[in-house]
Image 1 (tube, rainbow, N blue to C red):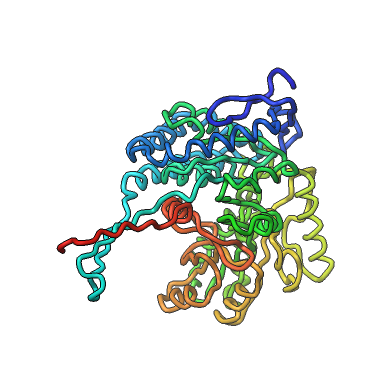
Image 2: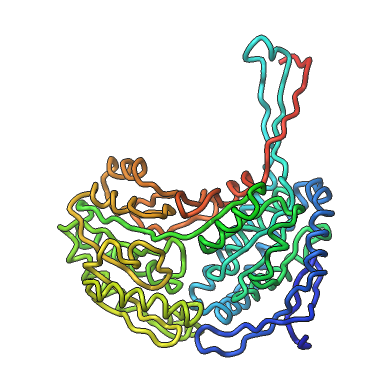
Length: 481
C-alpha cells in the first residue's frame, strides 16, 4: 500500500488496508488522492463494532447524541471552504454549488440534533372502551439496529449527512459506504465525527469497491440498509436481502409544468431562470434536476426563448473557477452516454435548440424541443445538463405526461391558481409537488422520496428517523386517568 493513501474510518479509528484506489479530477483527469481500501478483516471490524455499540449508543442520553450532531454542524461551517474544495476536486462540482452543499449538510446535522432532543414517543390512553379501562400505553421509537448507508457521487457530503445524522439521532450505529468516485468528502466528515465522544463503533466510513460490497449487504448484523443511487443497483440489493429493512432513494426524470396562467413576462422570466439553473446545475446530475418542461402552447415559444437564453449564458468549464456555473460530469463515460442520447433524439426528429456538444467529460448545456415521447431523453433518467421542452394544450395533457413515466420523485408546477395547485397535488404520481418553482427544490426537514421506480421509504431528518426505528409499546395497568 502506498504510504500516503488516505485511511478509512473503522469503528471510529483510522485504518489502512493493503490495497488502494486512485481518485482523479473529472475535469482534467489530474490525480487528487489515493485512498485505502478495506480488507476482509476491516469489514468484520466495522460490522462487529457497530453490532457491539448498538446498546451503548441507544442508551446514550439524548443531549450527548444531540451535542455530537451540533458539533459536526458547527465544524462543517468552520471548515466550509476546505470541504467544499474537496467536493470540487473529486466530484467536479463548481465551487459555488459545493459551498452550498456544505451549508446544507450543516443544516442537516443541526436539524438532527434538534430532533434528537425531542425524540420522546407519546402517551396513549387505552380506556376508550371497557377492556382498556385503567390502562395507559407509552409508545416509543427504538432503533431497528445498525445501518448500512450507501451513498452516491453527486452529493458526496449532504447525502452522507442524510444517512449519518438521522441514524445517530435515534441511536443507531451506521456504516457509510461512499461512492468510489467521491470518497474523500465522507472521509473528511469522519474527521469531524472523530472529534465527538460518541461510543466506539457508532460509525464507520468504509472504503470498498462496488464489486466487494456484498459482505456488507448480506451481513445479518446490519438489519437496515439505506441506499441512494441507481435503480438497478438499489432494486438488486432489495432482491438480495428481502428480509432486511431497505430504503431506496433512486432516480427520476423530473418534470415541470408551466400553466397558461403563468403568462406575465416577469413570471416567464422567473420560470425560465429557475428551469435553466436547476436543469444545468450540478451538470444535471441530481435525481430531481429539471429534465422535462411541459409548457402550455400559449406561452411555449416565449418560455423556450427565455430558457434558451439562460442556458446559453451558463459558464461551462473548470469547477475551481468561481465564475463557473456548470462543470464536468462525473466521468467521460457518463458524458458520452448522455451525448449519445441527445444525438439519438435528434436523429428521431428532435430539434437541438442549443448545446449538444461534448469535450471529454464536459457536455454543453443542451435544450431540445419536438422530442418524441419515447426518446430516452424523455423516458429515462438522463442525469446530465439536458432539457426537453414540449408544448401541451391543457393542464390535463401536462399532468398525464408527468405521470406517463416509470418514475415519480418530484414535479414542479408554475401556476397562480389555487385549484390547479391542489389538483396537481391530487393527481400527480410523485413524492413531492413544488408549486411556483422547479422540482429540484428540497428542504432538509421535509419528507423526500418517490413512488414507482423512484424508490421506497422517505428521507428528510425526522422522516428518516421514523424509518430507522420501530414502535415499542409499554402498557401500564391499574392506572387511574
